[in-house]
Image (cartoon, rainbow, N blue to C red; front, side, top):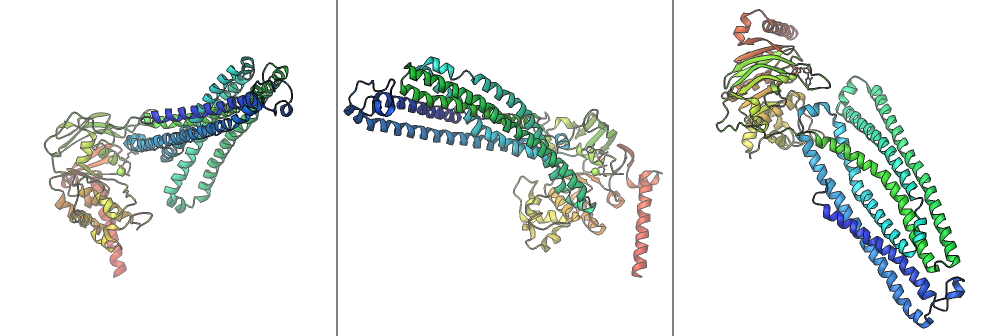
Length: 602
Ligand code: DCP
Ligand code: MG
C-alpha cells in the first residue's frame, strides 16, 4: 500500500529518531551544566545544597566563560529537535495523504470493475462506507499512529540506552512495571478492535439505510411510510450510538488503568533515584538528567499504549478495505477469440440454463432456452413480468455467465470472446434508464469512444424522438440533467438513453422495455425511425405491447423462465396459445378505450 512512499516514510521515522536523540542529548547537557558548570562555580554549594555538589575542580571564571557555549548548545539542540520533528511530521503527512489518495483511486476503479453479481449482493452504502470512512481510518493510521508508535519506540530505546549509560541499576528499576503497561494495552487492543469492528458494521448499515431511503424517497412519501422509516432509522442510529458509547467507555477505562501503573513506575523510579543521590551513589546532575529521561520513557509508553489501542481502528479498517480488494475483478479482456472481420450478428442459444448466484443454492431462472436468429434479424421477447426476459438478454454482453448449454455468436462460443469486445459490439438500452448529472449532450455521448459531430448527436436524438423536446429546454443540448438541472420525465429519460445507445452504432442492439414509458404515438415515431436504423444489425426487443413486437422476424413468448412459444406474428396468431391471448386482450382493451374516447368527445 505504501509503494512509492516507502522511502519517504523511512525518512519520516528516521527524522523522528533524530529528534528524539536531540531530546535525550538535552538531558545530557543538563547534567553537564549542573555538575560541571554550576557545580564548579560560586553558586555551587549554596544554591543547590549539599551532597556531591561543589566538588568540581574548575574555577568560577572558566565556568562563566562556558555559559554562552552551554546556552548555544541548548538552543542548537532545540532547533535540531524542532527541525526534525517538523520534517518527520511533514513527510509522514505526505505519505499518509499520498498513499490514501492512491488507495481511494484504486478502490474506486476496482469497485467499478467488480462483477454484476458482486454489486447485486453488496449494498451501495456499505461500499461508500468502506471507500470513505475506512480509508480515512487508514490515513490516520499512517499519519499519526504508525509514525507515533515509531517515534515512541525510538524515544524509548534512545532514552533507555542513555539511562543505562547513566546508571544501570536505576535504568532497570525504571522499567520493571512496563511489561504490565504493555500487557494491559494489548488486552485493550483486542477489546477495542472487536468493538470498533462492530461499530463500523453498524455505521455501514446506517449509511445503507440512509442511502436507500434517499434514493427511494418518492416511494416513502407515496406510501406515507415516513414514520416507519423514521423508526427504522432511529433504531439503527440508536444501535450505532450504543456501540459508539461502548467503544468510548473502553477508551475511557483504558487511560486511568494505565495511568496508575505509569505513576507507580515513576514514583518508584524517583524514590530510588533520590535515595541514591542522597547516598552519593549518583551526582545531582545525574539525578536531574534521570528525572528528565525517566519521564521521557514513562509518558511515551502511556502514549504507546494508547496508540496501540487506536491502531486497532486502522487495522480493522484495513481488513474491511482489503476484503473489497480481494474480490476478483470481472476480467474484461480475457478471451481467446480475436475476431478480425466485423461481427455479422448470428446468435444461437442451445439449451441454455442460468441462475443467479445467491446465498446457498442458486435457483434456476432460465430453463433450456434454445433459438436461432440470422444476422440482421429482429428478435422480440414478450411475456409476463419476472419471466426472465432481462436475464436472457443480459447473458449476451456477458453481464452474467450461463451455467450450462451453449450460446454462440457468429458460430463462436460466447465465453471465447472477451467481455470488452462483446460490450463494444452490443448496445443495450436498460430497463431502468439511468442518466448522469451532466448535460444532455454528455449523456448522449457517454458510450462513444470516438469524437462525434453535433449533427450525429442530433440524428441519434431524432431517431429516439427526443430532439424536439431537447430544443424546448433553455440550454438545449447543454441543459444539465438531474439535481442541478431539468428533471426529465420517465419517457424522456428513456428516449435519451435510447439516443445514447443508437449513437454507439452497435452491431447488436438490445432494447429492454426501451419504450415502456413512452406514449403510443411517440412509440410509433421511434419504431419508424428504428426501422431505417435496424437493417444490418441484429436486434433484441423486449416489450409488453404487441404492436412493438409484431414486425419482428422471431417472437419468443416467455413464461417462468421458459420459451413457451416462438415464431413470427402470423404463425403465432394461427395457433391457440399465450400470444394470441395477449393479442386479443390488448386489442380488446384498445377497442374499449377508443369507444370510450369516442363517447366522451361525441
Ligand atoms: N432475479 C434475480 N436476481 C437478479 C435479477 C433477477 O434473482 N439480479 C430474478 C427475479 C425474477 C427472475 O430473476 O424472478 C427473472 O427476472 P427478469 O428481470 O429477467 O424478469 P423480466 O425481465 O422478464 O421481468 P420484467 O418484465 O418485469 O422486466
Ligand atoms: Mg425485465
